[in-house]
Image (cartoon, rainbow, N blue to C red; front, side):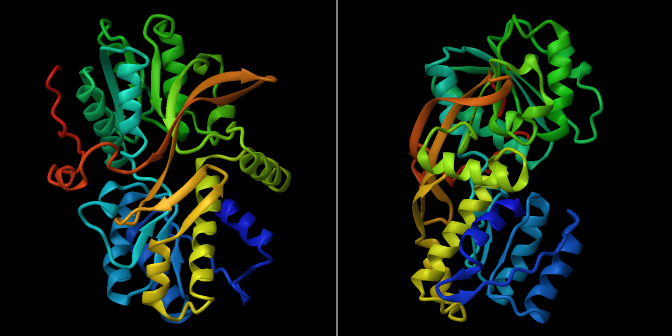
Length: 364
């Protein structure tokens, strides 16, 4: 995440709107109480003009009361907890990355209408990100005529996916997996060894095959179709330039995490320029953040919506081996997708946030 931001700041000469940019990096250790202590230090001792970062949803939510009380302009470039830009929208915070449900709504439609899947088994990690990813896919998939016939929730401390793979209903047309990092590696090996790969296709949330984990996966992952707001294989001039610069500096591939933070830094820069560098004017800076727009980010055009979340392209990707390496080849693009997809925002917000139990599994 930090490397993505750092690359943009280096390219900008560590300046925005003629003012020197100073970055103070703190480790929140993934612990809400620690994160709050670090944020207090940044605001009250270092007197920062803006705060940003955070990956875990429990940390993201825990910081909001302090951000609101202090009135400190803040941005989350990666955290995807839906309600941060839906039912519990803060005044002093925007998200520049994506909402968890944002890339799953179009993918649910794609799975039903284009892939033609009728019955899907879903396997998700048993916490907010898993619930929101699974829930959004389920709603859209079933709204387009599909049926989720089984939902299996996996604890975060899982060491063996064998018992879960064994439970998969064999009459499914596809298995949907929500995973990332070590969970992707564990599941991929188990699914490959189960003999199901050639019988029941695997589809996934985009983090499952994100480039941060793709080099650790093997041939068992070839053919997996997923969706997200970025792919390192996206063939545009902006992404080719970004990817070359990032790989040269860090000797690793770009990913959702690095790109979303690079373009998050772009959005912040656009906002600071819009207020002519007068970052001390917090209300003006926050208004500029909410109105920020980037037409040529590596992931494609980005425009903030009235709720503090980007409107952006969502890409359907297929894992292929190209020149000896796995990549997420883009096979379809949904342009200008909002976090509410094709749903009316007011009506959508009347339903509960996606959870372990919502939507209910009517066809299980």
